[in-house]
Amino acid sequence: MAEDITTAEGGTTPQVEEKTFTQAELNAIVGKRLAEEKAKQVPPDVQKLAKERDEGFAFRDGIIATLRNEKTLRDCGITDEEDILVYGIRISQLVTGGKTFDEAAADYFKAHPRPTRQPAVAIYGVTGKTPLCGGSADHQLREAMGLK
Image 1 (cartoon, rainbow, N blue to C red):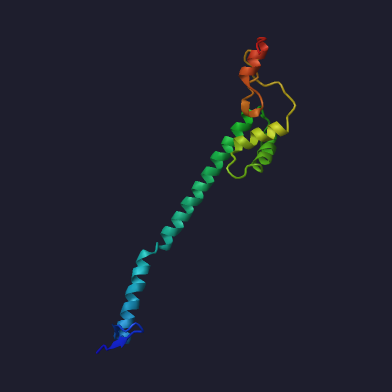
Image 2 (image 1 turned 120 degrees about the horizontal axis):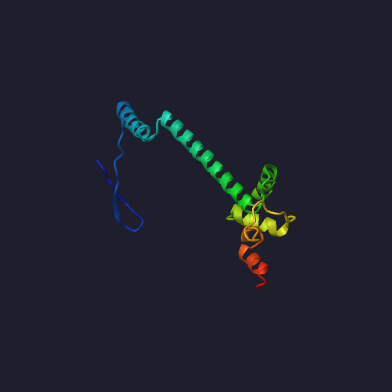
């Protein structure tokens, strides 16, 4: 039977009687909790499939990023495959924080101007250099027409 305990303030608090468990009850409680936790876990074969899926997505995303970066470099007039690799590596090292490859390419080409080459295709005297690469097709057209 629980007896009352007198506190420092003069009130009384009922004392809670401790419950004792038999080994069988304890085994049942622990077994139930282990079963609940095991039910929450993902089976190993499902974990393996999820890991393979995530690796596939990462590989695909890497290929897509590489193709986008190559397009950016080609838009800047870099057509040689080796140059694309070299500039791609150099510019990729500048991609930090929230900076994109395009922003890093613009910064790189501003800091490291390349010798001007004749583009493979010229339309009405416009070289097709994009503002990203340090040129503006509109500006070049206006300049060719004698407009400023």
